[in-house]
Amino acid sequence: MVESTDEASTSDSAPQRQSGFWAEIESLKSPEKKEVAKLPKVGAAAPSSDKIPLPDGKPTVIVFLRHCGCPFAEKVFKKLSALSHKQPDIHCIAVSHSSAVATEKWIPQVGGAWSTDVVIDERRDLYAQWGLGLSSVWHMSGPSVLYSVYRLGTDEGVWNRPTESGTRWQIGGAFAVDEGGVVRYAHVAKAADDIPDLEAAAQSVGITVEEEATRS
Image (cartoon, rainbow, N blue to C red; front, side, top):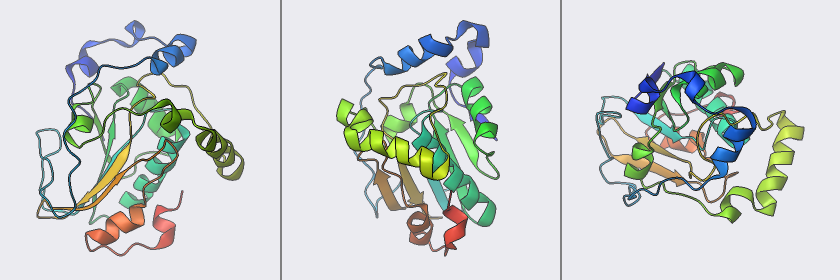
């Protein structure tokens, strides 16, 4: 399920949005800076909002995606959707700052959401609330990152897709929150290719996951 949380997601029509080459250029522009909260600490109460109300009575794994089209976002989304399918006791949430239109187009291209709820956050307010700000050039496109792009494509068949909406500067991350609303796992990407360990995230909230469940 894709849930739009921004007025921009519903008020802007698809023809008004840029596409193709210009959308790729737009994704490289520096976005609006947000006031970013401190990173939620393990053992502390998780941030809660109308968009992601916590606690919700179930262990929850939340993944903040870089942008739709990013191969690393694709890999972690596949892992999350696999986890949601294998472990229905976990509430899996993916947050996308790409538009609802772009996200809904991207999801079936990467295998579907299964039982993952997808929240659209174009203004990146949720990212900021959870301590996720903007990255550096090195974080986004350092030599090791570019090599990882190549390896991910050749080894796993996951390549860059068109970026129709969103910014490449946004840092991704993942969190696990127990049924009482306490953070048990926190991962902020140190580089664009830094993929969170969703098996460890699930284990932190008391769920044992078979390796295949989170394998892309």
